[in-house]
Length: 183
Image 1 (spheres, rainbow, N blue to C red):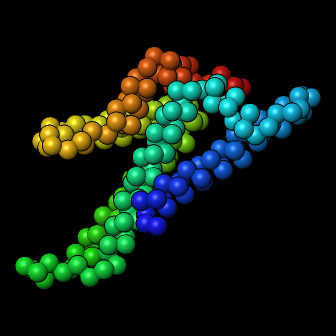
Image 2 (tube, helix red, strand yellow):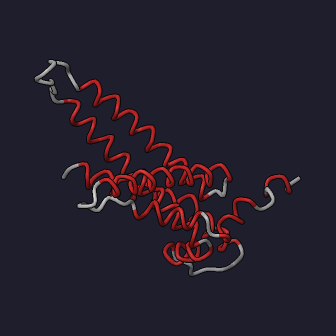
Image 3 (tube, rainbow, N blue to C red):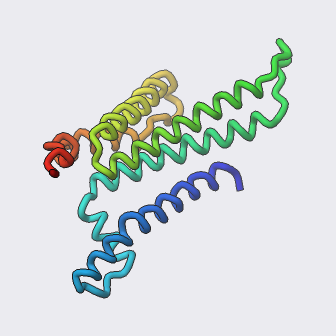
């Protein structure tokens, strides 16, 4: 199996495990403390998703961006191991591939940071997600206009832009700051 399969599956599994342990598990314990029993992990998971469906969609799209960038980084690192000499100039391209892989790793971490911030309802994450998805959608639409023979539009980025701009989602990030109300 190549990076095309391993990296996205790894990102999805790690995200699910963290979600189950950091979001679902504490809610199950809280319900048990209230005397409510019989709530399984997947039932509580569905309750959490139903509470914030649009935010869940945004987090999943951001995690998809994370896995795409991480997959690209892994492929670039794999290619940089090989000897890539340009026959015309004799220059070794491995260093460029390694630097590009490092850049894609940073981009992957930014997508991940955006997903975490979106779930935590941070205003900066909403802006970051808007920028990331806006750039992805703009670049792919421009490439699509230049090459009409292939399908290049990044549909998840377009969906994320629409969801980010929905009034119900914007209210969550631009409502009165919840942290300032606590004393």
